[in-house]
Amino acid sequence: MGKTSCRYVINALGKGGETYYTHCKDKAEVKKWIAEHEHRLSMKDVKIIDKNKHPLLSWFSLRF
Image (tube, rainbow, N blue to C red; front, side):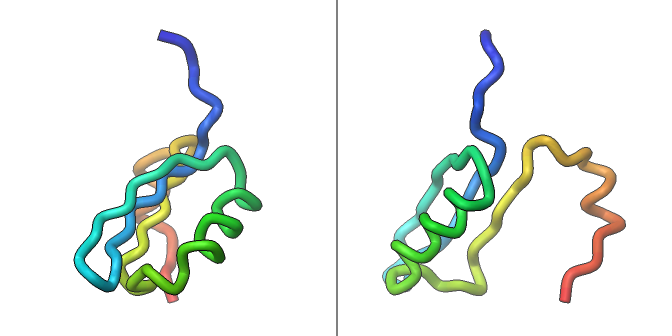
């Protein structure tokens, strides 16, 4: 298997109970996808995962 070029994984829940799962290669693409689908998404249920970030670092990051 080759290395994929998609860095970010977006897992989101829609206002009608839909589940969205997509891959993006950079932050600009993530922002564009969210802007296009913002009216359908429950913004508190959007999770963006950076596949290049070490999993232990997510424990130490602060969320505001």
